Image (cartoon, rainbow, N blue to C red):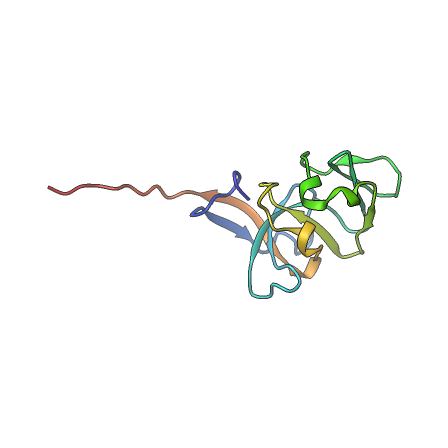
Length: 141
């Protein structure tokens, strides 16, 4: 999730954030991908249940209906390197309880592009804050 969250950062997670509400596009969440049980991930929601995703000239697009009005999925970037040229123009529809998550570091992120969508019941909470603890090297005399 660099540069938003970096190694060594501590985050506050609101585990009740989605008790009555659903995750929104742009939320940074903590959860588990299928097949990675026991490993928590921190990623950004870029597509919501029942939405369509596709790649258009290297930019991820999201729409509620196929070929309908679209919006860019929270971040714009060249993703051909990750999805491959063959994925240009292909469509993917999320199931009613699936979310498509992506890291902010487009080049090195392992996210829904590789591991598939995340089910709503695998989202544990929302990141509501972070802090960094500065460490200092010192010399004693």
